[in-house]
Image (cartoon, rainbow, N blue to C red; front, side, top):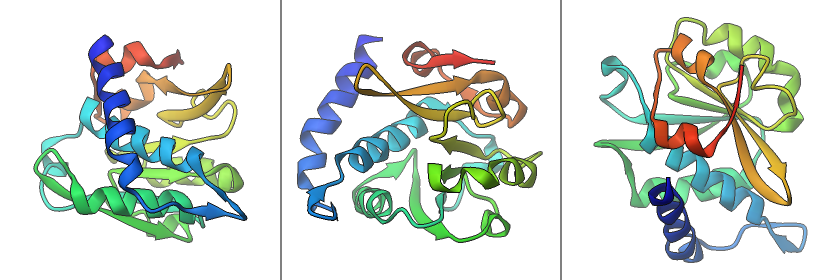
Length: 178
């Protein structure tokens, strides 16, 4: 439990300052930085089935979230997911999800979450959202803010339905929902 916190802290302190700042208006989008680190770290504590463990590890962002895309793209140049290089794709429609490992659906696209869940049914795709209540509605992970800090909800039964094995370490850091 403390190990994950130490790893996340070190990653935040060491890796993130190396990124070029991304601006929204006139300020740095630190929320996107934090979410990028979380998303990358989810890959360390979730195991995908064997047929998803070769080729590129693909993270799709549904809609325009240029800050998150920028940070994840920078990370993809420096890191791998297990032994797989990873790529970041911005998609404009759920029909473009394909065989993505992770699909991130920002709050401004929450209206299509239900359709995205239907599209990935039977696939080992991790759906990450940031809209209140979506972990209970079928997303595997949902970002929330609690006490001014970034947190995440985890729906373990949804992960199991998608043949994703979640480590106990990640479970211990999550707010578990059913």
